[in-house]
Amino acid sequence: MIGYSGAGKSTLIRMVNALETPTSGNVWVEEKDIGTLNQKELRNLRKGIGMIFQQFNLLESKTIYDNVAIALKLNGVSKKDMEKRVTELLDFVELSDKKYSYPGQLSGGQKQRVGIARALANNPSILLCDEATSALDPKTTDSILELLKKINEMLHITIVIITHEMNVIQKICNKVAVMDYGQVVETGSVIQVFSNPQSDIARRFVGNLIRDVIPEPLVESIRRETRNSRLLRIKLENTDSTEPLLWEINRRFEVETNILYSTINVIQGIVVGIMLVLFIGTDEEIEKAEQYILESKEEYREVTLP
Image 1 (cartoon, rainbow, N blue to C red):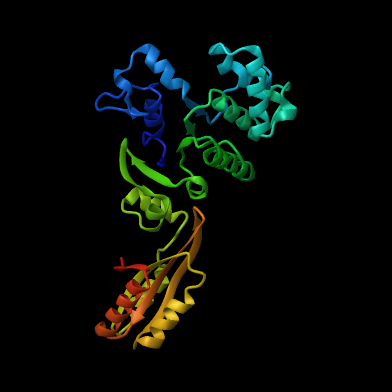
Image 2 (image 1 turned 45 degrees about the vertical axis):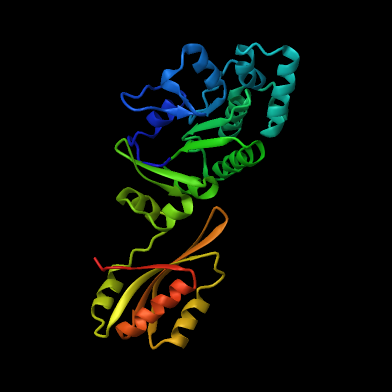
């Protein structure tokens, strides 16, 4: 879930584990309407929901072992089973050698790994991450994202991430919801939303990553074009090169093509290319080129100059 500060992201995620109660509507988690659960049922549900915080929320006076073990102690896990589980978790997050260290002796990235190990202690089915990487430097952020990706893929845990960083969504998410002023304004696969955002807020976010705005000098140049032309935005997926498509169009049809902008990004392992291309020719020939783009199983739309 992505949105600017104050969009309601943290409030929404806190409703998943009933730390916030909605004034209207229903929240369903694991096929349960959590607004109808009694305290015992709610406690059982929360055992299956782990949470990772932006500022780590570790107990500074306790060792790393004790910080990870706290949820197990509260659930009455035996000392032997607790020792085994904490050892497994610290090994999983690559902090086995820090078992008896204190939070003050760890870096920010190591503290967040402790927070992740603690959140996994009760074998949750859902992991909530509230801006889990925003307090970290870029290199450390990448390592934490790789760890979260491993958790999702190896442990089959659903991860709900609150963020305002597009690179976080680009690297590990497969679905995205865009929030604005307390409303979810757009949802879809990351590929879908990134390559063709529908809402203004999504376009602003995506624009920080995939810029397809024509520079003003080029806008004036296009306006001065006296020949018949049409500006198209073409999206290519998993294409090694844009040259064959345009080369074939120029070879087959009586059109000129002028690439005004192009970019390539890797999203969820899929190569996504965006091109802004000016087609010059008769309407009939340009329409033939457009049909060829569709037959090539690529997407396009006409762009209107501002």
